[in-house]
Amino acid sequence: MTGEPEATVALAVPPAVAEALSKWHAMIAVGNLGALPALLHPQVVFRSPMAFKPYAGAPLVALILGTVVQVFEDFAYHRELVGSDGLNVVLEFSAKVGARELKGIDMIRFDEQGNIVEFEVMIRPMSGLQALGDEMARRLAPLLTGKTP
Image (cartoon, rainbow, N blue to C red; front, side):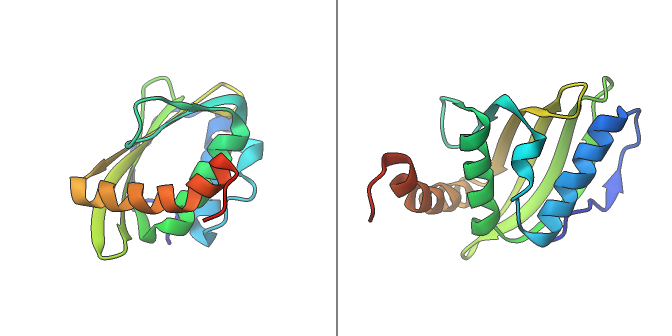
């Protein structure tokens, strides 16, 4: 996995957001999101490309994103786009899930303190999204329901 994007659009990003992004990219580079909870607002919302209903709360979002990092292979960010307010960032990525290649974006909204308050993912093509959804369900269902496979 590579964490730093190849091309960056440089807009004014508050220092706390720049620091949080740097920490995010460092975690992605090593494939370990153990430090993620410190970046998440307690009421962070995660919007999955597979589910209509968002997931809320730092522990659940950390679990989901930590699992995704384990599922993705050959993950790489390619572009980083920053909104005019400096609090909204879009990271374009590519990855594989098994034999399926996919492209996607992470849309991350920060607060002024650099906490992630919203994380939304969009993925294409459908075959890549389905492969991701199947693998995430396989790994997370036992954790979320308390049942072992």
